[in-house]
Amino acid sequence: MLVTLDSKRRLTVPVALAPTSPGDYFDAQFDSEEDTLVFRRIAPKSDWLRILKECPVDMEDLPQRRRQPSIRRTL
Image (tube, rainbow, N blue to C red; front, side):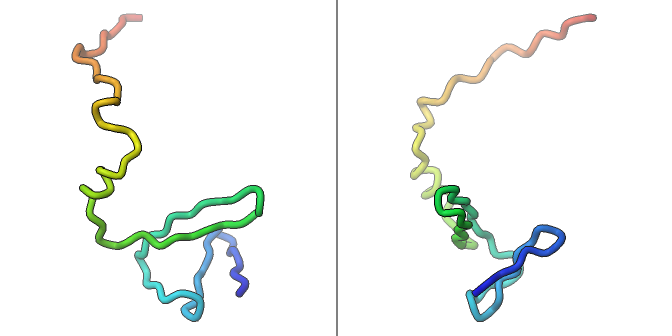
């Protein structure tokens, strides 16, 4: 099925292609080798704690925040 981009750079998904409703969230990725767009539906009510646990970077590995306020310089 072909989907056409309108003048406001929007794609409209036909109901016959996928049952969607306004407000659904999608993850869009562009594959430059195959020149394709891939859309994956994101669950509407996801568990944020589960997503945080799947984070590839451990929270202890992040750099520490500065404790001192920034210095204002006069010009």
